[in-house]
Length: 206
Image (cartoon, rainbow, N blue to C red; front, side, top):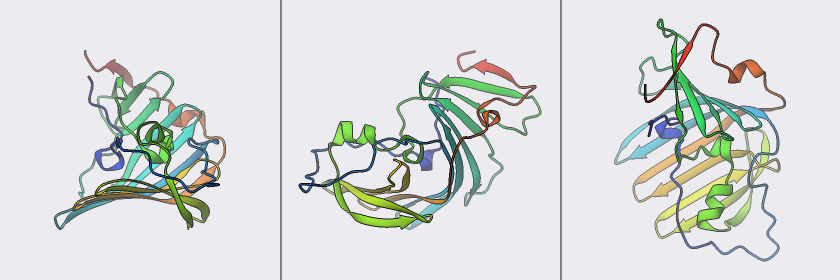
């Protein structure tokens, strides 16, 4: 399998847990985004006194997803762009500054990017979350949802349009967090989901 992933720090593992009890009458937000949008979010991972993080930008248009690193505490010059299609399960990876003008295409793999995917897949594995209340992230109201199995706890904040605005996970001493900084709802340019002109797309197994 081609190991294209949408960024190690920005991907949550799916938890397999007993369903969390929900209070009678709980109204949960949509499990997947209902609209197209663009978002800038920050991400971080802390473990045993070491932490790293940065910012990423995503754009969503129907089944299409664009994901790119905007900055990282780890430094480096990684500016790869990932354009995935959930309908086909394929993703193309390229560096806009690559002098060879080459892009690679392969399967997306079984990864979950909360800010793009919503929480439907988590519900399928972990059951209905507990609604804890409401919060506001990036100027948008959202409902706080929790899944917990032992010391594995995930708290997500999802708005009325199914957009995940914050996703936090704590397992022992490991904490992972993603939080939206800017969200713009509306149609996205087709150009965002196309490989730039002049690039050659090669399959991963070539």
